[in-house]
Image (cartoon, rainbow over all chains, first blue to last red; front, top):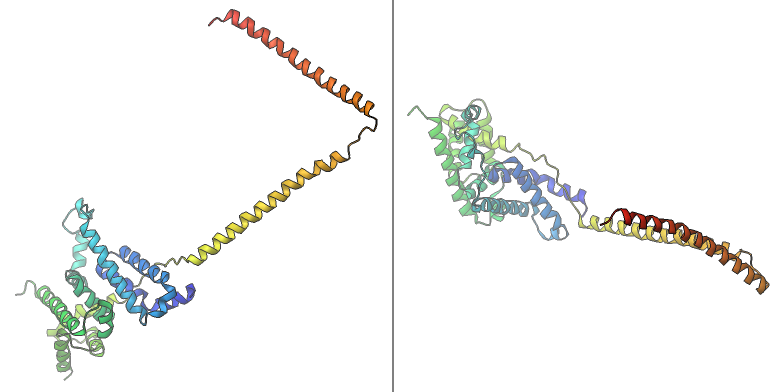
Length: 169
Length: 152
């Protein structure tokens, strides 16, 4: 397998990998790194890539695992360098204005969900995978996925309704 | 009618029981301008899903092939080998050149003549060496007088 064939192979799902990574890692740069990492790992496995029947699902699973590992290692670190250590904790004015944008609100709400639910929302509602594909990626059965997804969607709805009617009721 | 249907699908959606087709129907409905007022609160949610799907990774993926590395290594190795062979021939050619010249030097057939010539040559050499040593004597002289003046 040469590089061009490989690029052809990964092109359909490269952006999906990136978006899943961004969902979990938040920062674009880290998501780019994660995408690169996953693709390089796939490339190194290129000789037995044919033995997988669904490379996209494998890639998505690798992305999920990689991002969760990243998050775990960050949390385990004692020393956290966070920007708001030395800046005003109050969000800046322009940020506040942006936040009033309802799409940003949705993003914020989703980011507050547990990672597992974020992954499911990303795979189903954004990338529109079928349930059997999601089952392969996250290694759960379809019923459990449906239940969890329903929970995630209801949580989003709850927060949305609260935000939507904020100050009215 | 239409609204009933959307509400039904929406209910199913929150139960996690919709199909992709139904979800697309919802997305289409909420991206259209005429959304019923009591459903407007869901608009950002579906809008967000569609918007996020537009994000693309812009970074190039560097694919380093181990095979390519091996190829480069062998190219480098063969270059080194070629260079080595080249310099060897270059240097050895230079070495052989004076040898040819030496064989063409004149020689004496008569041993006595050869002896005389050799003695002459050696005398010339030793004379010159002595001249060299004499001039070094001066330096010794300087050394002595210097030691007289500058006493440690």
